[in-house]
Image (cartoon, rainbow, N blue to C red; front, side):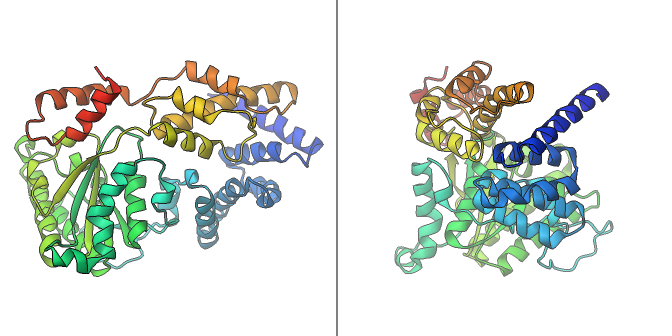
Length: 414
């Protein structure tokens, strides 16, 4: 470990030396700022990042300066810099950094006696607002969400004429890394709603009945700030099948969550619940009752057009050969998730970076670099898709996974 750290320090010092010789080389400056940030050398970040603010690397420079400001205790300044950075480049979103900038929820919750003074679990998201324009592909899925969520908000009179209420929930499922959370945020952005993230670790308590209290507090807070979207990540953990849960207290919080879902339909039509899971077959069937999760929608790996856009997004601000064919790379990355595509861009850049450190020649990242990197990668979604094939084959009597079945057939997953 010490040898590796020494090697990293040596590479950084080499970059700094090269920058002193070529201070106008903006690509090199961007590499230096990124390396300094990774090393936590924040004073030097604030020295070297500002010249990048008037270049295509503005977003990356803002993000580095935001982290430097946060390390100095300047939280307000850090938040302002971070929000501008992710507005310019959504790929820079960092949930851990956001949590650091928002240690306390800004909205007051109902007063309750929590023995450990733990947080209630509701975390209003205050980062840059996104919309469907920021989500590549998924056109059919977007239209289903428009029909069930967005249009009712935009045309309430029309829906009322046909007895359709605003509310309910949608369960998104699919392989990891395919944009379920991003799609949920974009849905909230489309209707101008507050967006709340709820995770199991935030609400679980060792005290009897406290977990259920926290769940209730989360929903009441969201209702009082409607229109609002509550996003439940890892819904299979929240809504596990009660028949398979051994601990009575765990069955109690699942029952409480079902009760709160019913409350949405009866008490507040302007509150929506979106949930995401990689394992919909592990979610209690009671959640799919009308008024709870009315729709269960499959979020597939991005299609070819979306893959090309994702690759271009992650390549932005890097020293790229203009001749790189994103369409050709998209055709060669079938079943790749968004996370896989981000990793491909990083790997393609590594060869050029290593050569730059070795020779001082800052060459462009080429199509050949991408093709070499691609030979070392496989789509991370395949294990999930093959397991999903078993559920479609043996547990789809009610047609719940018809969308998934059509995708698997078209993709020839065996």
